[in-house]
Picture 1 (cartoon, rainbow, N blue to C red):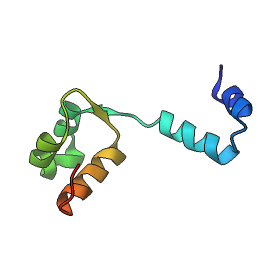
Picture 2: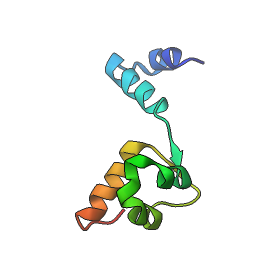
Picture 3: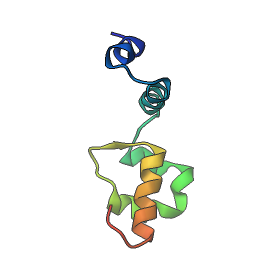
Picture 4: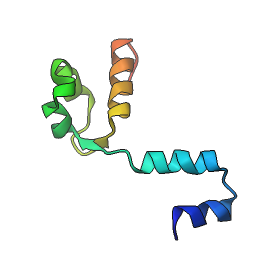
Length: 75
């Protein structure tokens, strides 16, 4: 069943379908890949402590985790 067919069955709006599609196509990276990334070169120690070895993360998720950490909140 395609995403469009699923949307028709659940009577989802076009905006909801677009949001789901956008979430589906976001690439995810392992902790090891993120630690090697130039984007996070200055935050490697924090990432090493905050991220789990057996999970994958989008850049948006990592940015949220780091933001919460630097503001003094939990993961």
